[in-house]
Length: 210
Length: 210
DNA sequence: CTTTTTCTGTTGCAAAAGCAACAAATTATT
DNA sequence: AATAATTTGTTGCTTTTGCAACAGAAAAAG
Image (cartoon, rainbow over all chains, first blue to last red; front, side, top):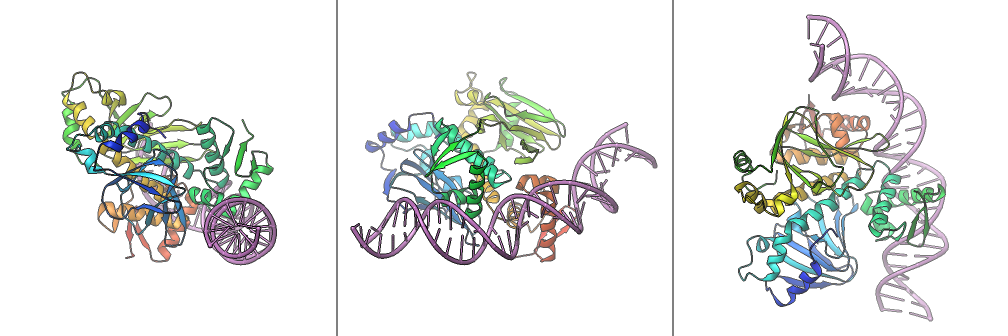
């Protein structure tokens, strides 16, 4: 998302370069990885979509992060502390690159182009993630369901450069992403429509303000 | 917080090395910096405490992040989008190093030890921030005030390796940090005491469970 | 193409959280 | 040491959110 260097080219460079990297393909709903032990896994999503999901003791499901093309994720980013189950689940067919973060840092002995490019661009890659997480925090700190919804819609709208867009996930998932009750969210969405803030056609949203 | 290399030594190495870095001292309540334009500022807090604070249109104040010794912050980490005022405020007398991120990346021409060390350790530095933000998100996605409070207490408790600790900020600020109403938080804190989960002596908390 | 599963939309009721306001306590300022 | 400012603790009332439950629509599976 916030990547400056050409990840696409870079990712394809992988094919014929390094044995230390694994590429795997997952089908919908498969578990890509779990955050349990500190294996220092570092992953790049090459295609598809995936969610980092947490299930808490009260049975609540939270979508902690939503990943799309070229987003990075993995244990390296997480301080595994609590009694939470953290899973990365494929939302559709997805291709993922698996590294060990240690290999990235202490440059691959074979000195392959692949690890070199990644290593050089690592700060920007992680910085992109920091920005994503800050956006996420901005959403979560909104005080009402209405503000969370509008904040989310604004985000997508800005990203797509359009007042009309398709939701990146189902309404059920959106509630879990905003950390709110689904039925309460549906009610608020209805009110937003009634108050003329948004229009909704299928899973397409049209912003009607400013 | 999550820094592996010796920042202390590194920071002191600055004194006699590079002109491109500025060190400033702030007194309590002074504004250290604002996130408005993309100057790509990158700051390190050498001593004291500071908060990244957001004031929204409804007059709510949110403490987005709380910084202590050797935490990093600045515009580089933020995708400045909305109509939010983002300020970093000193909570007590604080020393701060100011860089331009660009200088860190395209290595300082003078090739000083200072920029070199920072540059090498940049990924870990930023990675530490990612972990902090993930913790923050975990807190914010808790569904009730009770869970947010307990989550926060656990965090501090784990960090201090003790069931008894002093709160790092006032209760008023804690509410703004957890993004909840102060009086509702006070009520819940009272219930937590009544239910025997915690004890509170002044601004010292003692956890009574597990 | 039919069946099963998941998702959407809705509602009444209960519980939790927010708001406003104030006094007492604590901390800063002069 | 006296005064001002901020923080804590509390409460009654209102609003928002969560919970449970269900029917219809849509999507996935066989």
